[in-house]
Image 1: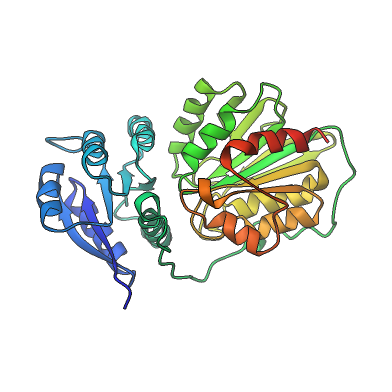
Image 2: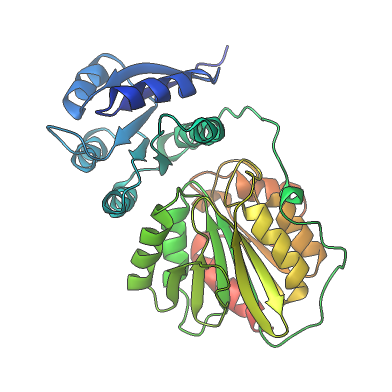
Length: 356
């Protein structure tokens, strides 16, 4: 029998601890081995049992989550998933935690919102399991329970045409999930000022995407912003899909722009990479370049195949540089990928193919 993934929950809210424990315990591949109201209690538990993953709140009494994260990573690294209440202040702090070594961020459950809890259940379980398979456990296959899920058909019909007329302007679409915040930072930092217009889906909760965009904008030569409905996709600009909204690439004449809209979860995500990639297949066709990066699950694989069939150039991050080789692996298995590239080479491939 395969051993269960052991999870330690650290949060000062008794309600949040209870909800997280119920959600994580509902997955047969995981067990909660401890629940702590602050890092000092968590440290006592860790002396008795070694968790595979820790979910960690940001703001707590006696010691904040960022300080505790730093101590964990300095003494005995364990995969950590940050848990935030999604205030603007915490968004910046939680993003800083990713730089310090946290694997991912999940939204802190909000009691009284039944739809949120039901939709977040799969996302939270997937995120925690992905963390168990990341970093220290990269040689271990994450335990994935496949759930019924909607495809991009729920948002946009599959394109009927294989490709569009060639134009002088190219557009780039990118999808990433677990480990993607750091991967995207390295990728975007390597792009020149005149890089082709770009739209990115990074699986991330609402409000975090705005802070993430601002941080990238401050360190990259290209302009980076959270996408708003009807934003134009232009050379030198990168648009990040906002959390909890689907983002589609559209075209009117020679102008590419984005549509930001509500809708059901697709491939268990909102925003969904499959939705972005399908829209790019329909409205950009052979004028597009697609990149799929590190992440758990298969979101983006089918959409990338549709893009390849429409004439787009498709790139997947290689296994050696992925935190979780899930999304790229599934795209490769479908035959959707033309080039598999290490992370530090992707920017060069994108620029080369965008100029052809």
